Length: 433
Ligand code: DMJ
Image: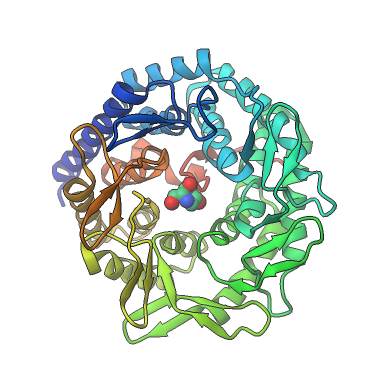
């Protein structure tokens, strides 16, 4: 692909970002998200409690795309209307990766102090989540009262907070943010099985596992991602060691060489016995992590498998049985992971194959998910029937990674940032420890 062709693809992605944003503006301005089929606004925590999920999550994407008008209007809305003093129980993980992550990265990109103030206010309101007997966070915290609920959580929600709170500590000088998020990861890691795996559900009060199924799937995924990324971002040696140990167990018990290629499935965390052979849209983040962790060979092999899964129906399903080569959950939620991994692999290899993959994803998205005013998820990738949802990560991640894949590398210096799991880039400079 020539530079001119890449520039044209980047421009087309920008055009689709504008299209989706205009739909949000038209029907859901000031709300968390747009329901694209009913053309109605949607607020995660009910009417009157909007936390501006879509504008916040989208802000750094618009900045990176050079969509100045859209970035300015989103930032103005945030500066004037975003308020965290709501008597609602919010999901720690989602609020942290989407809102806190974006406020910090947009603060770094724009220098707008209001964004850092908002991030600090949010961080302070979230801190009670860590007040469990183990230090692992409860699932929900009330932004107004600090009350907590939800004792059963999972590795992703417990262990994917360190990038955001670590960066908040770096920018505010409040070390407690780092220490609490780090303790949560360490407490989780300490409860790994003798063979080095974690399960998919744990009680944060007793510290006992309530579901022993191990894997790299949703619910566990970004725990592993953050071990590696925090080790790089903060030069944190404990995280580096925890990542290396975990990577060995993942390789030994979860990776699965099949005639159809390399996949990663599920196993019992104690025995290592294979329990399921599922791979899905969320698992497709792992080639990016493998590549960042210097295992380019496996990263490339696994990316080929992800691409095979995408091509089974012309757009990827939520879950796929890689032995039967059959779709087991047929929805597509506009997820980014396969594109994220493609972007990483193109960065590391410059193999044009990854640009071609990007064109396939883009064409599939436009063909099957575009609506008159926005984009919609699919209820079934086999029939292409749409569903009434456009998650904020479509702006934060899916469109951003697609754009960065085709845009000139100078748009964002890959080596100077670490992306949080919602694709918000954090500057690597200034070591915290
Ligand atoms: C995003 O919120 C994040 O990427 C998270 O790690 C997983 N789920 C969605 C995207 O699929």
